[in-house]
Image (cartoon, rainbow, N blue to C red):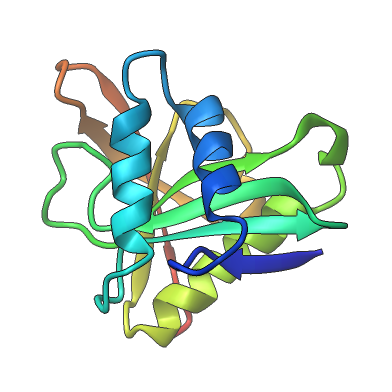
Length: 152
């Protein structure tokens, strides 16, 4: 397996947009994902960045590092988002590898912590992430906040 950053000339870019949207989007927000990923692929800024895990030419996992994961904690940055592993590849440690990769990328860019939100129970704790409260979304609902040191 190889973890690849999506860039403007990357042959996986169009397929990756579809995978991110299919896993995290809805019928009405394809343009949101397409626009976010296309612009991240051409910016010189350190974030946002989108990554795919590829095995034998097929995208089997995803994650992104974002400025904010559309929540109330605008004071925290960066955020790990869109962690996904295809069903047939789960249980092989790929999610853990993607999490470690994200922490390494954030550390390389000089960030001391990486944050994420989730409604999953007992997944991120297995990998040393700490539940540090809740955040609120634009709809007013809350979701758990996790953070981890990047070992910068």
